[in-house]
Each structure stands twice: as structure tokens, then as C-alpha cells.
Amino acid sequence: MNPGREPLCQYVLDFIRAHDLMPPQETVVVGVSGGADSVCMLYLLHTMRHELQVDLHVAHLNHMLRGAESAEEAKYVAGLTRELGLSATLEERDVRRYRESSRVSIEEAAREIRYQFFCEVAKKMRSHRVAVGHTADDQAETMLMRLIRGAGPTGLQAMRPMTEWKSSTHGMTIVRPILSVRRRQTEAYCQEHGLAPRLDSSNLSLSHFRNRIRHELMPLLQKYNPKINEALLRTADAISDELNLIEELVLQTWPSVVREEEGALLINRKAILALHPALQRHLLRRVIKESLGDLVDIEWKHVERFRSGLSLSKGKRVILPRRLILCVGRDWCRVATD
Image 1: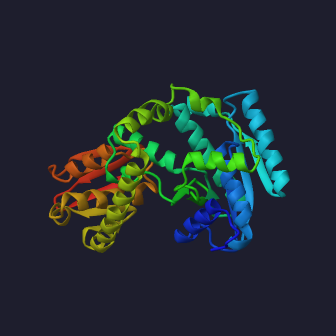
Image 2 (image 1 turned 60 degrees about the vertical axis):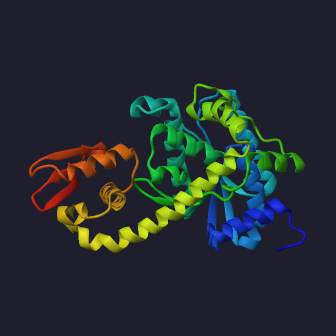
Image 3 (image 1 turned 180 degrees about the vertical axis):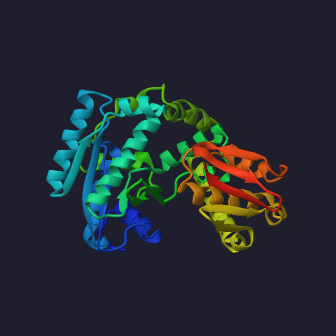
């Protein structure tokens, strides 16, 4: 440990190394909204960039949702990058128009557009790592949101320090270097260093599900357990560890249960039905992911629908989102897109 290094900086550096988030000699695209979390992350990464042996490129997207406020955020981020001597890509996208065509919530539309933008910037910079400023508070909120919506164990592990994301043209690795840092710590860091992050007024609107979790449910739960954040994070970590063990079992079991044939995956009915239900679910999740390329729009109920379909009579079909179909045969079930 560097005795002259700030505690938060050392903490984040140790977290990055523990999870191998940023291999040396790479360019890391840093998503910066202008809020306290992403600004704190940017300055921490800039401080440790030589030690990590990485180059940084800032990416900021104006979602065109808040008029002058959004424009001011873009100016603020542009000023930060000039001050730090970093290259940057700043663009704007019409999230409302995308939402109308895709028929998703405004939050989901913004997320999809933002990650597509990050993917494009990563491709341009020949980078595979994009750092985003999710904190421990975001993690706890995400876990509660998924619990309320009825997620299974995989969903309840919430966000991981590193996840993969693919577009139609490029793949990237999303890394979360401040995922174990509390929001109050990022705000304190910005204050101590004379930074003036922007406040996103939409974060105060109770029309958004996450904001209701943040401003209504979390304060209520803290009355029952003042350390509810820590309790939720411990649960997420425990679930993640157990899921890692199950994934090892999936890898071991896969060759005896699933085979590929003519662009489809075939599931051995007798073999999979003899397995524990938990292992069945995780095998089917992987079958779905291998078939679609990702698990976007796939929920617990869809996996259960597939699992129930394994016991149907020959000739029956089960249809999932994105036109993924399970065709039931006598000995094998065929999974492919229509």
C-alpha cells in the first residue's frame, strides 16, 4: 500500500486488482454522466492510471430528456476532460424517439441507447473495457427492484464487478470499479476535492421505479435495519458465490445433456429431467443464452416455462420472447429461433 495514497483511492485500486477489471496496456472507456458517482470514479481512475498502466477515454451521452440541464451536463463533462487532459466522445441521442419505436420504459430506453453508445465508442477506441459508476447503493437498490419483480437467484445477485455486453457489431466488458463504494463516499470525495458534480433532477422524480425504491422504500427499511444496505450486499455476494458453484456443475453436466445440431440445441429429456431442479434451471438458462446470444428480456418465468415444457407430450411447443421455441420430441427437445 502507498502510504501517501488516499484511503478511498487505495480501496478502489485493491478492488480493481482483486477482480482483474483493468488489464494493463488497455484503453478504458469511462462513462461519465456528470453526477457525483461517475465524476468521483473518473478522478480516481485518473489518479491511478499510471499504476494501472491504462489509458482513459471519456464517453458522455446527452439523452435529450432534460433540455438545458442535459446540455449543461455535457459542457461540464467536456470541461472535466480538458482539465484532466483526456480525450473524450460527447454525443446526443433522442431517447424519446427510440422509446416510441421500441415500446419500453423511458429508463430502459435510456439504458439501451447509452450502452449502445458505449459500445460504439469502445469499438472506435479499439477498447473492450467500459467503466461505469455504479455504487454499493445502486447495487442494493437493484437487488430490491429485482426481488419485487420476482427475480430468481441469478437476478438477485444483482450487478457484478464485470459483465459482458454485446451489440450487433461489437462486444464490450462492463466494469464497475466503485461497486463496493457507498454513494455518500463519492459525494464526500467530490466535496473534498472541490469538484462540483451535477444533480440530475430526474433522480428526484418518484415516477421512476428506482427512485421510489431509493427515496421511499430504502428509508422505510432502514427503520427496521439501519444497516439494510450492508445486509442486502452480503446476500448478493453469498448468492453470487453459490451461483458460481452451480455454474461449475453446469459446465460439467452440459456435454451429457445438450448437443448442437444444424444451428439448434438439442436437450436430452431423460438426462435433464433426472437432474435437480436448480441444475435444470441453470442448464436451461445457458441453453437460452447460447441460442439468443444474451438473456435480454428473459425472466425467471420464461425459464420455468421451458422447464415445464420438458415434460409435455411429443409435438408440443413452448414459445419464449424473441421467437425462441422449444419443440418437444420423444427423446430430445429442440431449441432454436423461429
